[in-house]
Length: 159
Image (cartoon, rainbow, N blue to C red; front, side, top):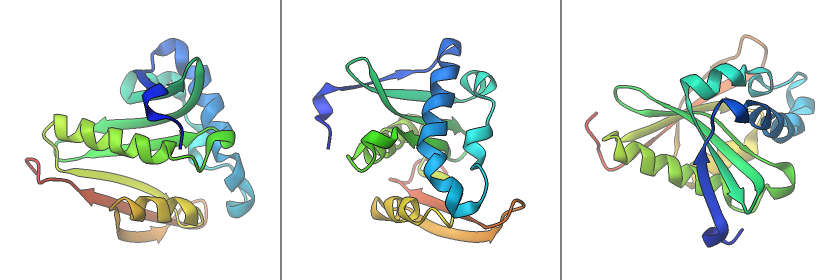
């Protein structure tokens, strides 16, 4: 695990779109062989996303290590994307960002986190389950494979 005290998070702005795209593409590239195509986050419009979603960038010093992209709904916080630079995966940064998302949800009075992932990304499904997410349902993905819908109940919120 990286030394948490040396990590800082800041909100992405329009000038960060290229860095968000680059980190996301690097983080998801490992999954291309598993699903036979680029995962959808590799194709997203990050110029648009930095305006429409909250994207928080996780740094150690000046080094961008990871990011989380979320948006608030009436009854939950949806995690659109979580990406960790390949050389920093497995060091607890994803877990750190999931905890950050919980804090955001609670601050907004929301009692639930939701996300979806590809069933072929088994290590991601296990990570989410290890921090309290449950599988709500699965369904075939239009591009092939299976989408896993997951959620985590927090302290109750106002849902």
